[in-house]
Length: 160
Image 1: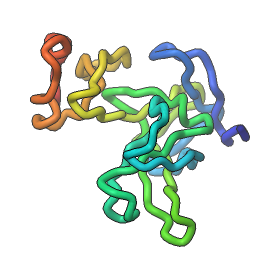
Image 2 (image 1 turned 90 degrees about the horizontal axis):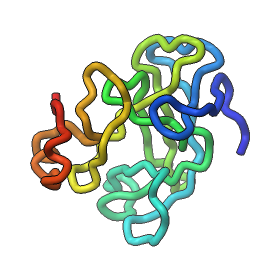
Image 3 (image 1 turned 60 degrees about the vertical axis):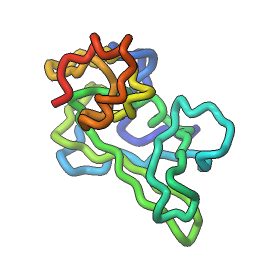
Image 4 (image 1 turned 120 degrees about the horizontal axis):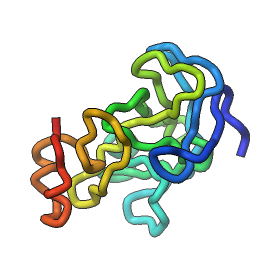
């Protein structure tokens, strides 16, 4: 796995491994592109490190999975993230292109995070430590919050 410029994998204060910056990133700057393996929604695979994207532009069905195989797989969730993942379908090569963009200036040594936005059925406890932590890794959309299993609902602090 080639190293990504300006990033370093470390033990994370949030969860397991994380990725910190070795240089400053400015708001709006592309932090990196993520390499992955493409799976359709009917494939049998471990989706632990996969991004889920709508498949309408790809012709692959309702959604597809971009299983991360580079350092981006260790970007942790935060309810107050410093980056966001963007993507587009590459028609010529029939694959996904995904990249992370800085939402604000990110200083050297800060861990790269983005909001995973899990659907309610797969929400899980959050340990991001942000002041605005929702208590769960979940999409704050009220429709997704309504799908929360009862045993997780008590952990929800705020969906705003």
